[in-house]
Image (tube, rainbow, N blue to C red; front, side, top):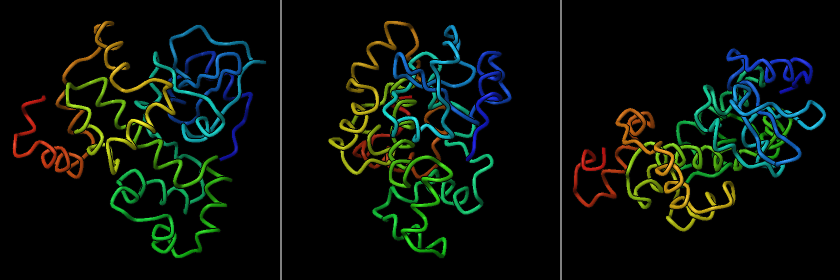
Length: 224
């Protein structure tokens, strides 16, 4: 998706909520990316770049802001203005298409195109590959569950769509530069770690079924 830098810059300086989820701002001096509504004092215009998706920002080496929490932005990953095919692909990824052992080749077949063409469209419109977009969504789901519930990390890993706890820990650490347990401790010290049924249920029935499976027969309500 083509972004107009001047429009994005005005929106993030004004913290215009209408643009929340439409783009992300990367701060060159800190290597952190934010939502346009971030409460932190806006960086100077010469020190920022803009990305159409969180995956694109992470691909460029930026890590998510812990204040504005990009994983909670509406419409993440941003589908607005992207090619229709990429929009459909992102929606399938959002619903967990690549979390059930399926590959990018399967996604391309579903969309009626070659894998190479799909990857090319993703880089052009989303700023990242389908695999990167899927990984970003898994980490974002996991981050919300880390912040907003007291679920065990092993259950979070599978609820977020990871095939193993090891992959969950590796992906989370790659994005946040710290393990999920450390992020939860920090959140709790700030008084932000609250058990939220809505947060858990917002990931859909597929995730809830995964959580229940991992609980060895115990009901989901024991954590919420």
